[in-house]
Amino acid sequence: MTVASASSGSVRPIETRSVSEQVTNEIRRSILAGVLPPGQSLSLRKLAEQLDVSFIPVRDALRVLESEGLVVNPPGRSASVAPLDLKEFHAIYRVRRLLEPNLARHSVPRLADAELDRLYQAAAEFGGAERSMDDIYDDHRAFHLALLAPAASAWDIRILTMSERASERYVRIGFGLLDPDPSEHDRRREAHQLLVDEFRKRDPEGAARALDEHLAYNEELARTALSGGLAS
Amino acid sequence: MTVASASSGSVRPIETRSVSEQVTNEIRRSILAGVLPPGQSLSLRKLAEQLDVSFIPVRDALRVLESEGLVVNPPGRSASVAPLDLKEFHAIYRVRRLLEPNLARHSVPRLADAELDRLYQAAAEFGGAERSMDDIYDDHRAFHLALLAPAASAWDIRILTMSERASERYVRIGFGLLDPDPSEHDRRREAHQLLVDEFRKRDPEGAARALDEHLAYNEELARTALSGGLAS
DNA sequence: GAACCTTGACTGTTATCACATATCAGGCTT
DNA sequence: AAGCCTGATATGTGATAACAGTCAAGGTTC
Image (cartoon, rainbow over all chains, first blue to last red; front, side, top):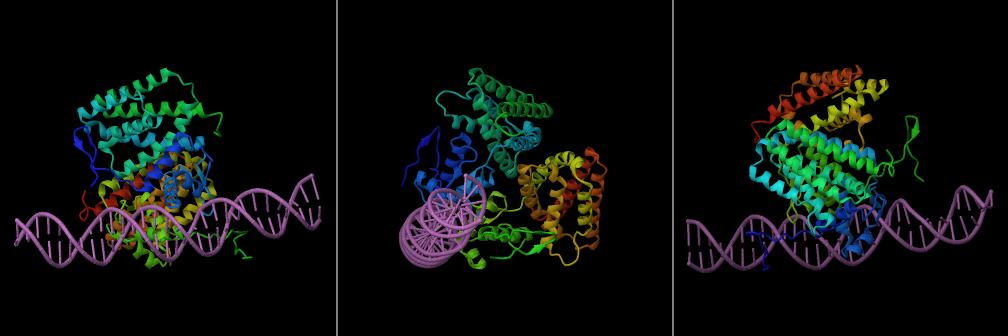
């Protein structure tokens, strides 16, 4: 009945997401963007009213977000946005720094040249015109996932997605506290292009090291920006 | 009004678990024990009837178990027990083998002697009299978690618990396929005692290596037992 | 005889409703 | 005036019911 909207070469099936999933995405977006600050109380009925749905999907969403570590949902009491803690931030990045370089070793020989070209292009467009901050971080997460995709199983992707989302909250708030230096955008773009270049050399160890350093640098940057306002 | 039951030195608060949580635990137990085999279709209403509850808690439970990777829950269609896949098994153990030895390094200097004694004792009682298979694996999971607890943050514990549960399903089925050799019980008990001994030496690297080898051995054991019935 | 369509039962999804519990404010007691 | 109790309000939890989509079987048509 409904006509799928054509796009770039092929007809894509219309994605009819469930209300529950839409609510989950919206609340997650609000949390990652900082609109719902850490510690913010999340009342089922108020959220349901704001989103103009019943509180059943909201309930589902909070349960999912709890499993992602973005929300704490004590039984019987109101849910709230998970607090920020530098110890947690370090633990999240530890998992990333252990897993991602390891996957990179196995991914390097499997990444097609065309895919690397595409990723290089994507990195060049980071923070490009008319993309919201949400879109930019979506791109960023997809970029890191695509670098490891050839070597990542479903379980790896689950862990990676969880970890990237959990760390993203810290990174966004940390970078938000930095001076809005335009050169910072250039630096990030360049850093990701260099990362792709490193993968192009087809040297597993070198790529793994480059990815580890990339993660370490970002962790340190966010950490210094955050420390002061948070408990260590 | 209700009098809390006194126990070993202190009055513990009565834990009143929600129905949703009880249902989650029961379904998870059934999946890990193999009562609900991989691929088994999970109908909300049938499960609700069997558990004598409404399907609302069942729905919540399936959503939680989906986030743990034990259940696949496609929107609009029936949920089912996640299939077994040796590639997935390897990915799960990769995360464990990367994370757990790393945590062990930081945990070794912080584990009290008394705690190590307690864990040694617990290992000695593995598979002891009148404990169900479920209890044994609960003990086993708690044992591994306790070894790393001093160095593990909330995020680490989240990842570890997820990984241990996900791998437990493979291990239990794999070991179930082995001949019920009583010497196998002795071997496992001894292996865990040796692990504690290694931690007692207070050598971070040695402990990390011992834990990695322990995990590698168990992975290989379950893998050989499973291969043949599963796709590689 | 095989492919296609139709129809029916089944199942997940969402909304509305009833209940138990937690939270908080106001007033009382000390 | 501070602490405790008590009442009302709000909130999470669970159940029931109506809606919509899926899937399979049986009939029809080519």
